[in-house]
Length: 67
Image 1 (tube, one colour):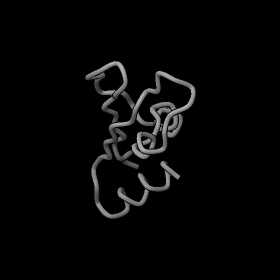
Image 2: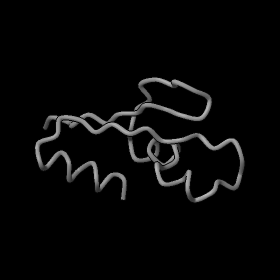
Image 3: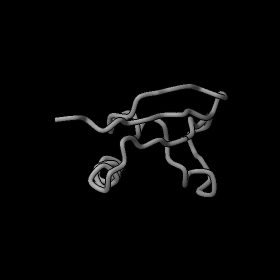
Image 4: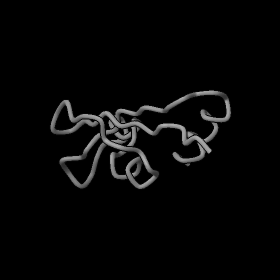
């Protein structure tokens, strides 16, 4: 689903897609905090880490691949 959303953004002309997912510190995360997504899901979809501003947050990006 993450990859499909990124592909849609690229089809619409976006040069890149950024996200700011969380890194959970506990196994169970309340839904109210999970809506932004989990870092591992974005990494599996092909996003690259740009920076880690805190222990629980990443800034990640996927650039459009030129073919």
